[in-house]
Amino acid sequence: MDHRLLGEVVGAAFDGCTTCQDPLLRFMVEDPATSARTVELACVAVHGQLGGFPPSMTDEDAPGSTSSPEFRRLARAGLDGANGAMFREWERRVAGAERRSTVNTATDTIVGLMAVGG
Image 1 (cartoon, rainbow, N blue to C red):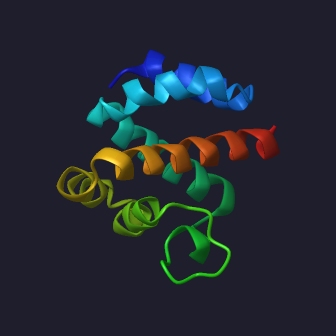
Image 2: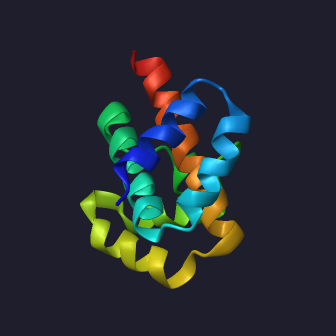
């Protein structure tokens, strides 16, 4: 896992610098371990802040969901701390454009929770 890359992506997103974030996301997408851990971090943050997951983050049919379908599938697989299941789902089913949308959702989630959590 590339902690520096994760920090740079989240920092750029928190600063609202999409031109900074875009090239970093390309590196993130090419690094499966860092990508998967970013999703895990987002899920841990949501669970810690909200005490669980709202349906809009796990249910594919939930109205008003802004989470990517892949993020919802991974979050659902990892419910109740089943991170191993989430990582297996990541390796088996998430690649290319899906990986980017999932990392975008995870990054947006982390930044959003940082903003409201102070």
